[in-house]
Amino acid sequence: MSNYKIHIDPNNVPRHIAIIMDGNGRWAKQKGEMRTFGHASGVEAVREALTGASELGVKHLTLYAFSTENWNRPKEEVDALMNLLVQTIVAEIDELNQNGVRLKAIGDIENLPDGCQEALEKGFEATKNNDRIELILALSYSSRWEIEQAVKTIAQEFHDKKISLDEINQDLISSNLSTNGIPDPELLIRTSGETRISNFLLWQLAYTELHFTPVLWPDFKAEHLYKAILDYQGRERRFGMVSEQITDN
Ligand code: FPP
Image 1: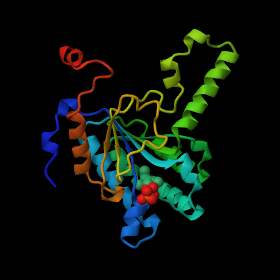
Image 2 (image 1 turned 30 degrees about the horizontal axis):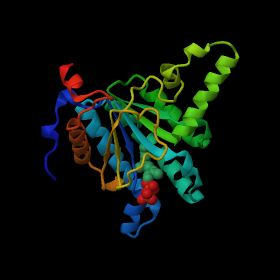
Image 3 (image 1 turned 180 degrees about the vertical axis):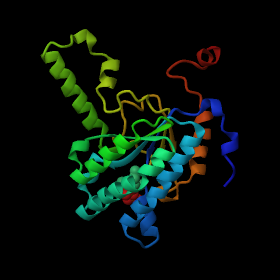
């Protein structure tokens, strides 16, 4: 693989990168292994992405680790994923701390098994003063779930006369999503060749550049991240304006 890193413009690195980690099951099947082996092997790719992002100065890395829809998978696979999550967090807390990583999570965390919630709480607490990069795990997350929660909260506040109709705007909606306080991603990466958003950060991805790679998640290396960032840097982000307006500013 060529050396992509040296071509990256350090002044135009995305602040926030989101990744749909896909293809663990197919990767395992190709090797004649169980799907859960694919997930366990995916942890190494998480390390690659996190280290690579951190070294380039990315401030937020959001990983789609478990969707609301993933609850419908066979119980053994769900249990294995939850165990893997707990084990990984517990095993990695020291290293996260040494590398200035702050752990966060978005999603319906209260729906996760108790052991998983406890491991997460420990991880949040132990890393809360770190500020080099935020690792945000999307767990039991779906965007439509999150938007539904936000609508309910805002409707209740309106009903209770805490806010007026005029105060319902895009900022208020953003601040009621689980990503409150986190800037929208500039770059989304999805692995395994699928070209869907799959209910991930629908509101937040409004102007995000999308990068799809055929690489299966366990094979994802820092080089693939660099390649995605270079692809991003080659795009012209117009936000609905014309090209001249962007270059004049
Ligand atoms: C998608 O592959 C992957 C997942 C649903 C789980 C991702 C989880 C990890 C990489 C494990 C560790 C994570 C952390 C943050 C510690 P898939 O099962 O949908 O693959 P397929 O599409 O080939 O079946």
